[in-house]
Length: 195
Ligand code: SF4
Image 1 (cartoon, rainbow, N blue to C red):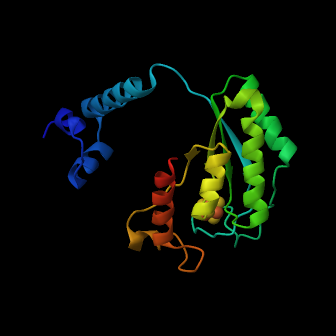
Image 2: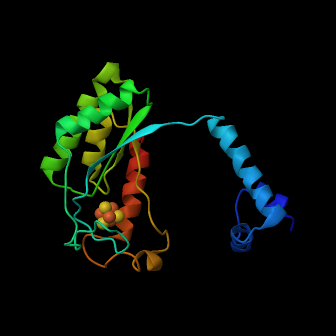
């Protein structure tokens, strides 16, 4: 099948993906042209800047591929103060960024989740709430996701490293902190709440 036909497909078969990954020469150029066309159709010929705030590397989980997993005792742990986070958000706004993303290792304790609610509320008060807020803070209860949404966070980054359960457990320990089905439930919950 010609590369151009594969590039027009909505759903790719395994063999299509292999062709794309192995593309060289003219086929590689076709792939790049297609990628550019998709980018221009969605984002125009512009660079969109987002302010990424790395809140903390303290995490209760231990994903096997991750340098800051909790079982790695060699890592120096840190957490930004509220003032530092709000300072970053103000700077992002002054520089004309459309949004900030707050990212951190996963914590589920009340002190942490309430703190995030407070920070989101305070960031929303900068210039009448023009700054969009994305959160990337791992798996949380529905109540917490709702609390953060109502405070003003409307995008959430929660990836799943593999949608294949067997593969998932090759890169996550099998324990109560790492649950494939819980991950899927969290993604569904986020969608249902309107993130
Ligand atoms: S939840 Fe995120 S930060 Fe924590 S160990 Fe896994 S990948 Fe690393």
